[in-house]
Image (cartoon, rainbow, N blue to C red):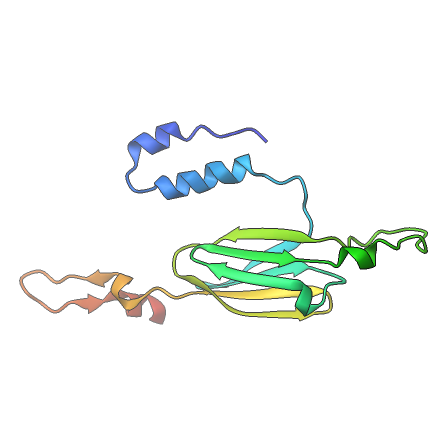
Length: 154
């Protein structure tokens, strides 16, 4: 994949350095390994779901770590158990360790994770603190109105 030149955007914007760095790093670190396959769904305005196909993994072999703006999913297979493949005529199910990283937006947190039928489902929710929500400022000393409530009712 070709790289993007974001220089024109960098010089005409202020405060978007982190976003441009994420884009550049992502294109530089494009992995050719697409294991395990995954889906990302937007369930609603502030709810998301990441689903990874992790057939053959048990819950104790998967480690999910949520840090600020980063979700990391690591699957560790016992290499000694997978070394005896002499009985297999064909091995089509990938049974190897993996690491997947997902950059999260501000205020996105992991709500829960489930493993069923070979699919690891991670529910994410964005919770913007009250202090960060937009507020309408009245002119001439009027009352401040929380406009996020108006938007939620719509």
